[in-house]
Length: 157
Image (tube, rainbow, N blue to C red; front, side):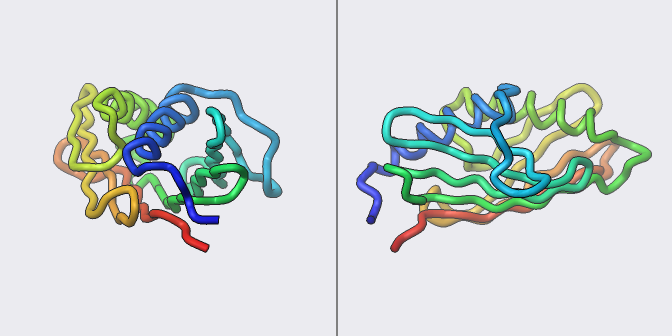
């Protein structure tokens, strides 16, 4: 089944779901795969699942479903590059503060920079919700201490 949702409504739902789950410390749901960490969000005919593995270094996938059919997804891999300069807890705090600012602008894509104390968060990407690639990183004293790469877009039958 091809998606019937307009792109601007899909974008709004994705921002809402991302803000309510990881960034909003949303409740975890039962893991969909062994040893996965899952966060879910539902609104009307749409549902969102963020499922990832790991902690300091991690990999995951976000999927949006319309009427229980996958219509959009994003894959990501992140890791701490300099554990002597940033902990996983610090990275998570910087990411949550930064992304909450981005989501308040009603978007999850587009260049974005945010300063959180001694850390700088930068996100760059190309494309739009239909098809995109990107990278986020955190720097401290001009040194990149954390990075995450991601890509995704619409799913068509």
